[in-house]
Length: 516
Image (cartoon, rainbow, N blue to C red; front, side, top):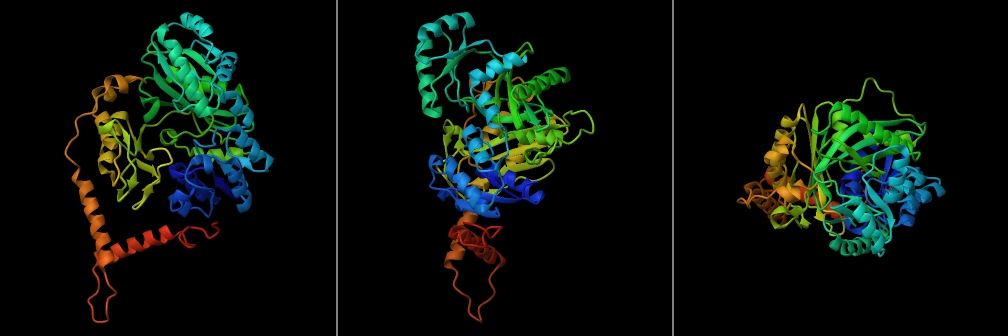
């Protein structure tokens, strides 16, 4: 097993990896940009290295800086988390060239799966069903595209061959709109991924987004941990995930898992990954893509299958075989995850940044909050809007929905807007409660209710924070004859001192002592 792991990421996923490493006795190295100097993943690491200014193109995406940080701190492995460099085969090559283990799939598998066109061809050879489409089309080859579009039929999708995250995708309803969609998709793909290659794919209407978590070791073993339902999406971005899916029977689950295993074996895949499928109304499924990394929504799988996926990632990367199964892999209970984003759902999900004045985390049975938040965090402008993930587990879906509703009410984040009101409205929606959802359901059928009166808890927390700050600022040193300060004032002073020390960035405020 590794002695020291550098985590090439930030936020909640960096904290998630750190926790498992600590349980296994592995030291961790945090890398951070200048705005993240006081972030929790930096405070809780054994070692920390600043890798540049705020923009990710100057810090978290610079391969040479990550590798140099690993060398300088003696890290023998790198965990990429998700996003940033997690699916970049050049980063894997750089790790290997430096004698550092990359905790993820090999570069060859990334290259085979990273381009959606080559991935489609690979799946066809492996016998995995794919959505009918047309591959390898130049963004300006309109004649070929028109001919292929007429063969595929409308509506269809114009998609970028490289990248992901919902970028470079356009829905085309009519032949007249095809050329404009190709230009827009190609331009966005070139800007986001440096590759303007596109392909066409039939738009499977009212399809569910179903994905299968898999893990593959270096000894040829591949394990599929059932399915996740990720159909609640806005602009191709997932907002709510659950496991299992109301639409998947045990028989269908086996077919999906078999297809995921075949997909992994088709390219010599290793470590954690997710095979994504579209499930149509008739119960047929089609390969969508492979995410060659750990995903944001992995906790719901962990809860229903009682597995630590990060622990398995570390074990597999160090050469260990997957642990033997004690029985058949079947989901136990129901798990739901809500992505808590810094945005205002009443203003078309406008991003919300600023100082987090107060955080109160939900507690209770079956409740988990993976987050980077703390009182006094100044949310940086440079990164994703996700502030955390609220996850619940219960014996069945009905109770899981009730538990999530309770946890959302218990969650308090004062100082910035969040999408918690959206999640509460979603949980009250009859279609969601009945499981009548698909990837376009949210944008086509869901309406955000009118803005209610302000939640008094938020105002109370802000007032309390202001009072505590004012007390600390106005307090003078007590004289020998002065009465002892109140517990409230002492607590306020202690909290203020913690914030001052953290803001100073001096040695001793991190868990370890080997910080740079």
